[in-house]
Length: 166
Image (cartoon, rainbow, N blue to C red; front, top):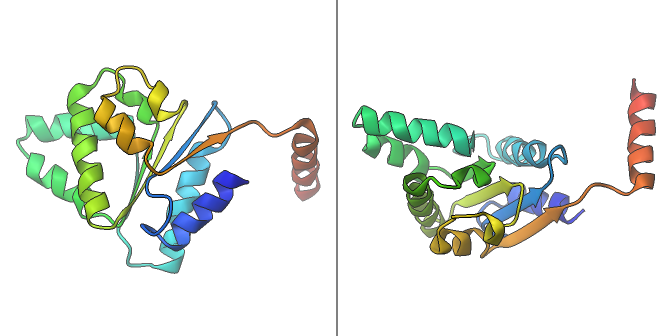
């Protein structure tokens, strides 16, 4: 419920509350679904908003291509001009120092501009191994929400609701 309420607040008033919003939890609990819903809801309210959803792995590949093609300025401008950045699976940053540095600078730039940033991971920022301390600190400075599997009763209710819908 906290993750849903915080996500709704972020989507309706990006940059105003819970910046950054960091959602973490196990596989299959809906983190990716939730941050994509944030982007979709924000765009439904403000159609001209600059919103980008990307996985950390895709960001890494894009950074490597920008370095190879000598287009790092365009890469940086693409991310620093956003109103809302949704970065999925930040645990992918493990062992990627250059990518961590870029994420740190992108985050600082967006936050200075009043833009919203939302992250997901399979663990909280302070438990991501080899994550630079300054980046871990930034990721955890907003609202950090642990998404847990629903209780048995809730799972049964969800299944019944889906079965009735089908």
